[in-house]
Length: 388
Image (cartoon, rainbow, N blue to C red; front, side):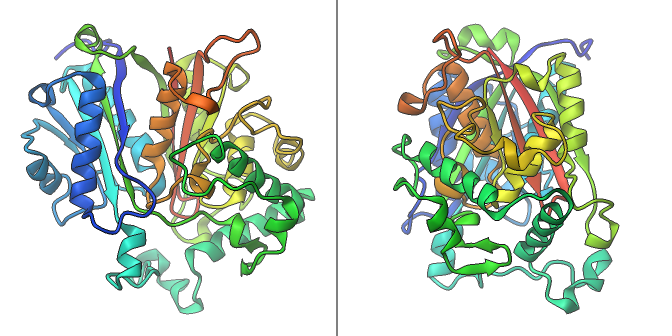
């Protein structure tokens, strides 16, 4: 075993086809994303000795490894919802630093949209017929209703307005307009967000993420592998993870997400402050997720998120660009979207984001960024700080 001090870098990232992909299987999207990430890194798959995957197959990631032709000696199938990939990245980085692996591939693929259109799934999920959630299931609490109740609590507690929440959707769409891979790119206004069909009070349709197909892959490697890669390394500087609750009755405060803990840990371990971040990639299945996560990561004080998201601050040209690809609200959301946050963060740090490229005040490329994923209904959080 090594001393656990090896530096760890992201050396390859890629997306599979995303959006409307009616003629592919989830396994095909896994394979496409994995091939593209390896090609991006310029690293042969024979050097990949670790695999992290979740959400597919009875024996994930065994089935994914088999499909990809990999025989890893280190695996992770942690599944904690949308934050899975930030948590997996933390586990992989720890394993590489300790010498238990040298190159770990994180890979995901889903045909969530195509499956529903073809009648292969119902589109709703019966969470927790047994266990701690059994006491909520009889009342029909859907996932979106849980987020909606949390948003209402923040609005009641701090005076956050529905217009401020709508600003999150408007600015995500403005960023998506600069991303040729985004599913929805037509600009929207606050009035258009507010006038849409009600889904779960206070969320209208555009307060909610889209549903898409798609996959992503991220390759992490030890520092001695970097010289063999074709890309500039993006270093894992600090990580944090936290689980909060399963049933809403055990959630101490609907206005505080588990990112309050995972973010503090990640920034502390990286030795940097939120104010030093050049951008943030935040899981945004609903507009409230963006707002409350910004608070909990420390970009503004608790209760000030509503004012913070106003005046275009979250756009690519704003004070704190957030979800620069358009996020789950406009770019793509095939389920557990946390891996897409890491892909976009790496592209930004490498200066590969095209029209949506973030620049510092002096015109140079960003040096630091953060990706923070949320799982369940604010049940889990994983935060990763990255830097050039």
